Amino acid sequence: MDLTTSLPAFVLAVVLISASPGPAMALILRRAALYGFRGAVPTVLGLELGLYLWALAAGAGFAALVAASEAAYLVLRVLGAGVLLYLGLRAWRGAWRIRRARTTGGPQAAERPSGPAGVPVAGGCGPVRAFTEGTVVQLANPKAAVFLMAFYPQFVPADQPLFTATAALALLQVTLETMLYLGLAAGVARAGAWFRRPRVRQRLEVVSGAVLVALGLRVASSGP
Image 1: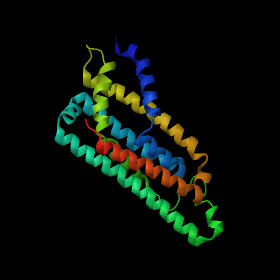
Image 2: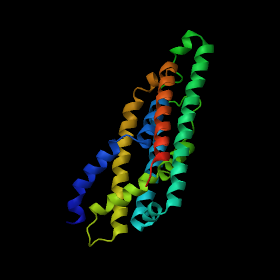
Image 3: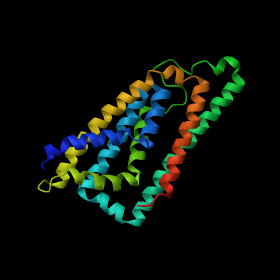
């Protein structure tokens, strides 16, 4: 089997992986719902940069060292859990602020959108911060290192250099995921005005915060 023959199976696997729930999906949905399509783009690009860096690390054998080192894995696990918990708590804080504003702003504030469609609502982080958050969330996920270390070799022929083939496959994965995630963000952003209504936004912040906190706790309690 050569690399070309394995591509259909690889593309199918990437699509299934991209559609699975996780930190990346939670971040993208929240950003697209609250800050529109343009607000979600930096998050998507940051996540994909982190994925590509982990893929290169897997091809170079660094990911195997991380998985084999209890200390390195623990550091990544704590960092990853901390980032997700921070984002979750920040979402809950946003929900609390919206609730307080609704309480003091009168009944009209409960239904008035926080901002026009396509314009980030107040309190949103800028593109650089969103890009950085996406990259950090991906790089601080030790499961990504373990998964990619086992994933790519299945599609690399024995006669091909592992690092070069992994880099090529990872570039294809990043391209496919970027297209899929941007399509998802565009679809969610179409309902942006509804999502940005204070009542709906408060509930979304509560739910997304709960998801991120749950993911953080799962990362914290998981083993290699």
